Image 1 (cartoon, helix red, strand yellow):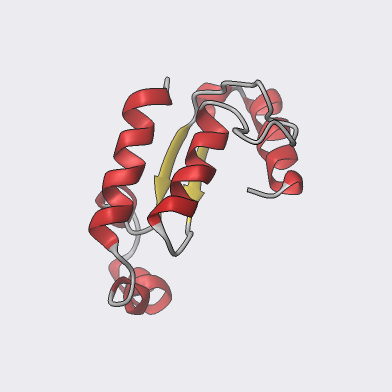
Image 2 (cartoon, one colour):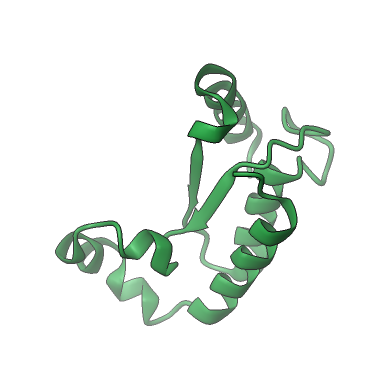
Length: 107
């Protein structure tokens, strides 16, 4: 997750409270999605950005996870994301995100 996005997440958390912030990730690979999820839950693992050392414990989901998919209009989801499900390793992404949430999310 780039430094600017880390800053935006931190500002939203400070403004609205960590319990009221949900981060939605759309990375194409489980590893990169997991790294972004770890950043907003346990802190920036590279210790380079605004979230270095800040374990926010935020709720974090990937856009292909059922928890997100079930909450949005099916037609809009299919139009915007459905095609990508065919080329992504969806099961790997879901497993990675679930693992990060179980280990680091507080909300």
